[in-house]
Image (cartoon, rainbow, N blue to C red; front, side, top):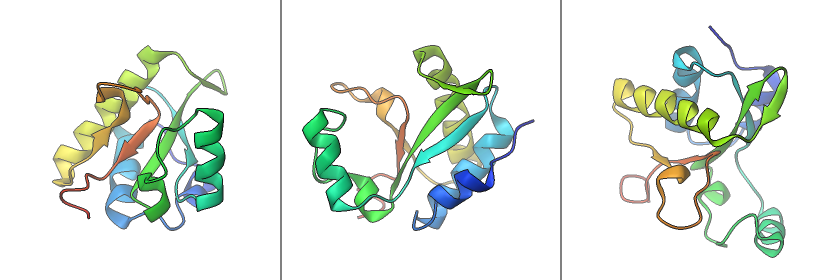
Length: 126
């Protein structure tokens, strides 16, 4: 069983409590360790990510604390292999169901798939 680091908790400062609940349960359910890479973002940071091509929108859920990016950890390092993010998504979705809190995974998007990204849906969390 894995646990979140203090650094991960720090990166969830300002993140909606429902999403924090999902992340906290998912770390107990996951087959793959993970860290929280980013939660709440400033507009300046979002503009930088759009300019670099790492994001496609200035309306990111990160700006309102409704999104987190997770990094899969293998061998003590963040890894970017897609199969690891499918494992993280399975844990996040299972936690979502168990808690009765909806979550969306960027890996399910039709365009610009974003494996590390998880967010609370606009519909339920305007």
